Image (cartoon, rainbow, N blue to C red):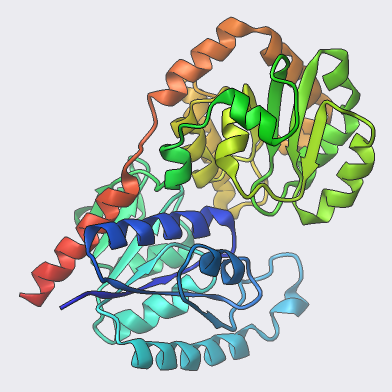
Length: 367
């Protein structure tokens, strides 16, 4: 009898791409496994998951808005509506298990499953666990984590240290630097800096790059700049006429961007860190300062403590980032040191380990 598994969560690429990696690994491990994603209506999972070849159902759910209490007035009604939507989805699909990867839609689906005796699994990508996952962890079958010391958030007996799943097109990439550079129409003779604020962009990073855009040409550097949608038009204006700059709102094939890059400027979400470790690039990390429990700073400090990254605060990026990029680009010894230490932290098969554990736990329960 083939397994039927719901994968719930999303909101950002940091939740969606690991979920897709786990789904692909489940298909490799068990031929014919039935998978269904559940995400939040209007969020990027509703586009990215079908693009990856999987079915998804949307529910009406939103997170708590810390900046505007007024916007939270409808939250109880959305939670109630999502409960009935989840009940209908579960009744129709009849899953053997539910896997939560974080994001708004993860909580109601796992909560419902736990209340009805369906085994649940959690993947916590960050080194500081979110409140929802901490609550759900008490009744989860297994909890997959990427960092040591997570017993302060979860029951120690349920923890499995797996690392974070990285997309196979990145972890298994054989794309050469020249192929990567060519895909962006840039010059292979020039050192290339990749700047990415994640799937939704990063205002602090974008403004810092905008303010120092002229330094790239002055120092014989070229730039691949993923801006996110809100900053897209402004970045196009800032880079107009500059043949050493490529800008785009979203890079679909990140394996080409990583292959092209000699160094990377990035936020420090858990998945960004996991990918940087696998591709082994010198990295300047600018944590998103408003992440829950400031977990992006914790993630970045983990790399810094291992001499595997450079940390700049978002509030200091506008004044410091330009100089930091130039200094690192000119220091080959520092680049080599960062590559050596970040590559030692890489985990390339987390998706496979997680998929095998889920299926093994299910078989054990079905005995």
